[in-house]
Length: 272
Image (tube, rainbow, N blue to C red; front, side, top):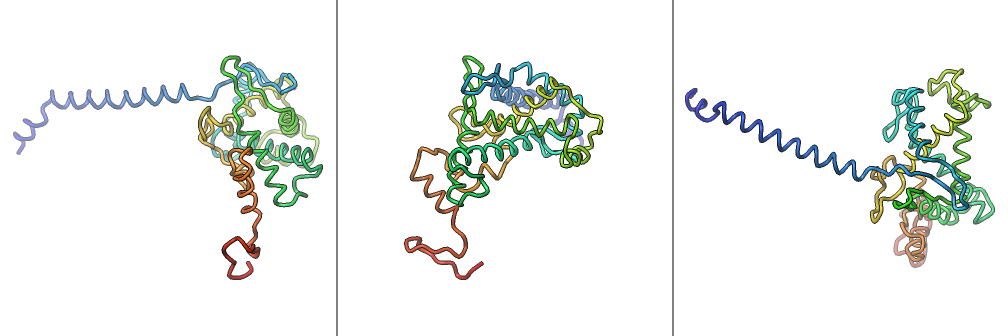
């Protein structure tokens, strides 16, 4: 038995197996590493609104990453993660707050009312506009510019004001409570330049998580993190110009368990 084993697994053969395995493994690592590099979300040269207002620059984003690391990095919150024991995932936090702010802006623009005061159908109409606004890819590879609507710029300003209340001197009870929950010291007060840089970095991570890749139906981070506001009701309609599909989504999402329609084709067994 030992002789048969020694004949089968010679030192030379074992070395060949090891070398072949290493070549295969490193080839896989290099291939997927290259794919990750080429498919990474672009860092724009500038982010500007439709009226030409400069919002962020590439230097702001890169400096913002350094600011984020200086205040705790992944120990206090995370980026494209699941949060931490001390703070939320900042990309998810920004995405949700920007969506809420933009939802109210669009509701006021379309219906002259707060989004929470709209009917279900009206909320779904606004939700489609919201999803289209946040998911459309306006990055121009030839110029390196991301162009966003003036309404989204206003939503960014709203979120930036919220971050200022946490990362600079807290001026409200809510801001003080969040600062304590996130385990930041009361003395933490970023300068205006560092706050601007930090919010530019967090905005970019949020933009990457919601913006669709060119010619694809997933974002740069494969739709992660997920936000329920962007997937509720008629927001599931990818193309708002497809009116028929949009109305089907809006109608279905407005139903309650005790609703019935003559042409719906089913009835609920009982009230829920």
